[in-house]
Image 1: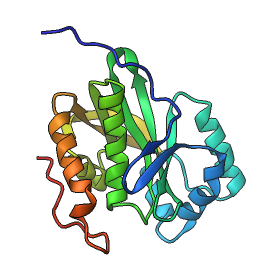
Image 2: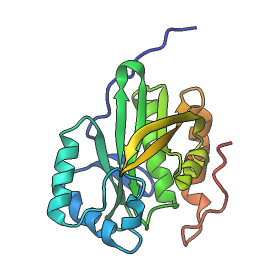
Image 3: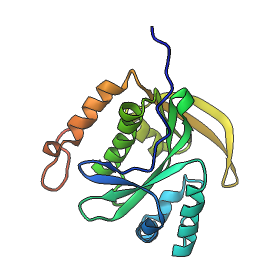
Length: 217
């Protein structure tokens, strides 16, 4: 058995292209679209489980993006290729190339993309880049144990539940237990094939409705 190897590098500020979305390094030019998504009906509610609150002004969001880009995490804007609009954001977090371990976090998928093929492809592009391009061994997903939609999403995407960190954070004035999930490199080839099958344009009708379900279990 060969010795485990570190990843090639941390993710760089590059564009990742899919069938339906494009991931671009998050920057100031994305702020107006993100603000529109965050303030549309249902947009603010999707901040419930994030550490940040819904932005109220363009200046506030631009400042938030600048502060994020100055930190250790690397965020991207999720752009719907059909209309060119930013519909959400997500980030690379807990980036450990030396251990070949990385997390997708800070996920904000707005009302128009949540629970659609756009969200699934956004997750897939991160996973594929981490495993296939950069050589990571471990891809993590974490969420508040009370966040049932996030837990259901992790399981649908093929993440394996690993356990709970009790009293892990103080979150918006409350104690947060955190559930940990992961996909590891041994599991990825089969998951990649299923993602590619499901995301194929042939699997969707003219209205964008799936013909078959994603089967990661």
